[in-house]
Amino acid sequence: MKIKILTLFPDMFNEFKNESIIKRAIEKGVCEIECIDIREYSLDKHKHVDDTPCGGGAGMVLAVDVVARCIRANTSDSSHIIMMTPQGEKYNQKKAEELKNYDEIVILCGHYEGFDERIRTFVDEEISIGDFVLTGGEIPAMAISDSIIRLLDNAIKEESHEDDSFSTGLLEYPQYTRPIDFEGMKVPDVLLSGNHKNINTFRKKEALRRTYLKRPDLLDNYNFTKEEKKLFEEILEEEKK
Image (cartoon, rainbow, N blue to C red):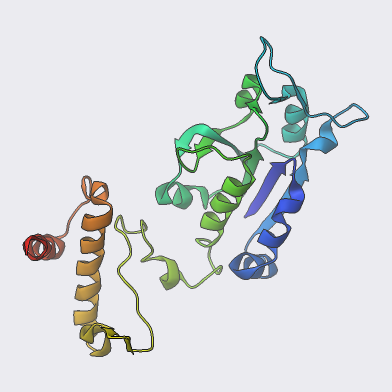
């Protein structure tokens, strides 16, 4: 997969591309990340990319002609173009699973007061990472890129992400490591038993419990298996005590 980031601040991505899983994925050829400076597509000598809003108002608005030139020069028919904006569809794991199937994703990062409305005609979809406003789309672009790359074949071991929060529709079960006893807080005995059937049952139950206590909304449309229904009934009884 190739990910292109259209941004006014390409240097913000230097550390992102050169650390941890992302760096290893790039080195293994799993993905490629290219950061493209929108300013390079401005035609005036001062490299202006924005202007005051028509009709008045605070701030500056990214200009449609500059952004359109940047998009046209860096996309093809196979590119899937995403605009980062608070007005977009709220991002989730299901969308990450969908986006990983594209050969090339182009992420347009806004800044300042926002985009000229006509820029929206050049993108395939608009995405938001939450109901809050940031100074620009660079951090959301990193979040989306990270969430997609870790799902690609050979980026990490498949079992490392298949039980992640939201991957199964539930929050992830609690995890433990050594020391077994830390200041009186002990690792549950079942995890030390070596009985994988019991361990799997424990993890399913605790994933359900954690989801019920922290994000009950996720259970509204969750399809319980017969085993999970039984475990969930046990949880409800236990949480009443």
